[in-house]
Image (cartoon, rainbow, N blue to C red; front, side, top):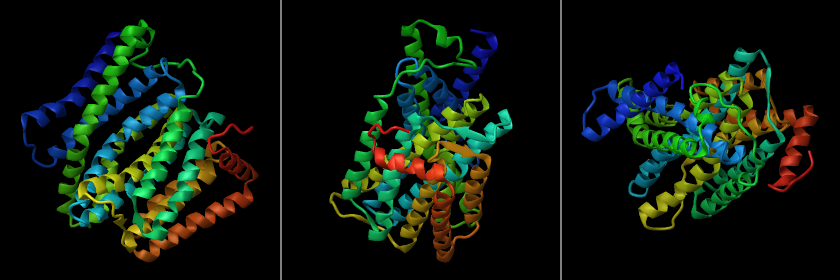
Length: 396
């Protein structure tokens, strides 16, 4: 291994593990260091995740490696939202925070994450679009079924054990199907290129170490990072709902954004976008489905999590955004123009927080979805293939 690669890996390990020292020695860090230290650790862990995912592709199908990376990368989001769901079982006020965090995370992932991949790829390669492969029909199909179902939740105004069964079933079928994907030999670049040429035993050990350290650091650093940001934000007099909805997910989702951008900067935009689409499947099925389950376990009953009007509006808006994004990538192509539209709709809605604004944006997403399907035969065809497939092999 080259000296510069060893040095880089050592630095990444150090900035990842420094938070573990503060965490387990009980050292109290004053603001803003109580956010900066775990934030830097998460940043380092994102590198370890990307390396582990690349090496894992030697052992498992590429689609499963990407799905696993996406699942591990959203662990911070799961940790924060499961905490809110658990507390909601004891204090109904926390339902407000659980849905705020979940809807913010999902909209942030599409509105900022997906778009950033295409724009980064354009900056790096000059290509004005990212092409997905036919194997990505699996993610699109799973996301389509979950999105269509998600419109039911704001209509009935609750999250219940029935939603858990449906959404976790979609996730289980999706994960099962990723294990059936064909194996492709990966092309490894960067600091771990030499590790890729190690014998299988040491290489597998390095893969497991990268995954274990990154997952562990993200898990112990995510909540302190989010809480540190919240503590700083409260001094600005910003509404708590908005802080939980945007600052906490921004903190917890930074690993997957970093991993995706790293892939894009290495001219692997397809893998980058695939990772974030898989992350969306995870969040829209496993994350949402787990909320009522954790809530019921904490509360000791099987009553639904009742949503108020604002929470229902936020869920409707999130579902509408998901549908529009699906329509865009249904033809397995994502252009700079499409990414710009998605990002513009996401960024502008941050400045309008009224009921009327949320409803208007939801209708805009739905209208754009309809117009897009009318104007784009390839999107119509792609969406029909995904709908017909429902994880069955259908010719392209």
